[in-house]
Structures are given as structure tokens and as C-alpha cells.
Image (tube, rainbow, N blue to C red; front, side):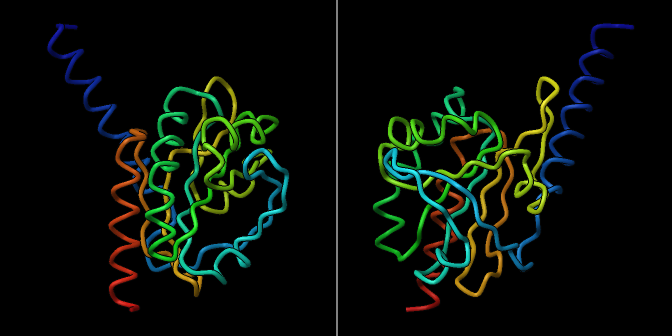
Length: 183
């Protein structure tokens, strides 16, 4: 096989993976499944309910593969920096992971900088409800997917991308649009 043909096949496979990943998450306009998970805020354990969080306003719900991994740490820092701006718009940020679930207390304190709740999803059960699963090193984990959910439970944004740096702007734009249409 020629080097050009190998390159073409690898690029084609990567494109197919991106298309499959982008289509996997629950679509905009669908009803977000309610859930209750154990998590932490600022290192303190708590029980998180989506239904209760939605009573305060829209929720930015983002799934990430594993606490303390490189991309997830980058994303957590970015969400931590943006959390006050989300709060000004009436939105609550919640992170959910199926990887390193025993480390969410420390992750919420250290990498999320005490700014937002991180919930553990052992066995990726909630990630499965949200159609955002991936396989990595023989483990089923939550894929990097962000949702913005209106207080009535309708999904306003569904965005899957393995690049952690694009999620903050996408979710912020959706929250701003929601706030503008509900002020």
C-alpha cells in the first residue's frame, strides 16, 4: 500500500469516527433524562439531582472521560474560570465522569477549583442514558459531551468533541441565547 493511500485511509477512518461521535449524543430538543449521583463540590461529598439543579435555572451538564487526565483537567480549568459568568446568566455547571470515580472529591477541589459540582458515574450508567459513551483501554467511559438543558428539561445544546477547549464557548453561547430569550 502506498503512503498516500495509507494516509487517505487513516484520514477517512478519523472522519468516520468524528461523525459517529458527533451523532451519538442525545439531540437538541429531546428531554434530558433525570438522574441522581454522588459527587462533590469543593471536595465536600453531596448527592446531585438534575431535577433539583434545574429548579434554579438552566444547567450546563458536561461529561468527561476521567478525572485528572490531561484533557479533562484543561476542560475543568476552563469551566472553573467561566463558572461565575454562567452563574450571572442563571446557569449551573455540573461535570460528570465515569472514569476515576473515586477521585471526584479531590478533582472538584483541585482542578474544578471549588467552583462547580462534579459527579461520579460508576459504570457509565448516566452517560449511557445520554448516549455519550466511548471505549478507552478496555473501559467504558463517558465521552466528552456538553449539554445545555433548559429548566423544563429540554436539551438546548448537544455537543460532542474530544477537544476540551471548544466546549466552554459552545455552552456559553447557548446559555446566553437562552437568557436573552427568557429575560
